[in-house]
Image 1 (tube, rainbow, N blue to C red):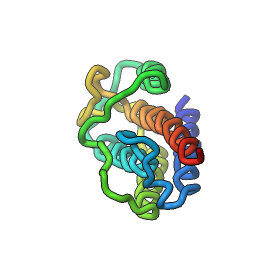
Image 2: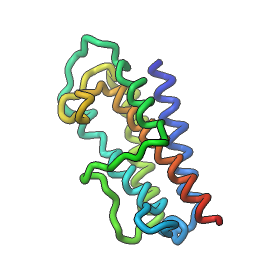
Image 3: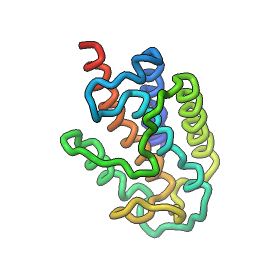
Image 4: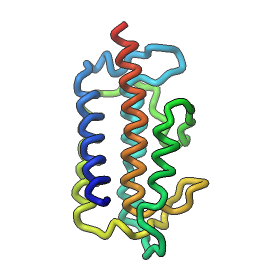
Length: 167
């Protein structure tokens, strides 16, 4: 199960980087509808949400439950594209023009950090420094799974924006 989740994280984040790379800086920053995010803003939101290193390297403890227990529930919620979610204010994207190369570099660095870190530590440990309300603390494994489904949700959103850009 661990290898599958890490592989899915790798494949999903690679798709995110491919989609962002495929657009010009102008396309990345173009709004398709007032009030909606641009592709660059979605990328900025994900970049901010990828500040996972502090949680993964923070205080941890053993867990008495399956280290992937919460993954199915997270997947069910985040991969339901019929519901609209509001972003926590800490990771709301900027309204400013976003530089494509800086965004890609920051995303690549954070993604690579998770890939490298996950090979060196016990992913079953419960992270105690931050939790998502209503879910309680996640294991390192669940945090990586959460980032994967969160990214999948926004890849879906990016594809919708790109479709609207091409109209």
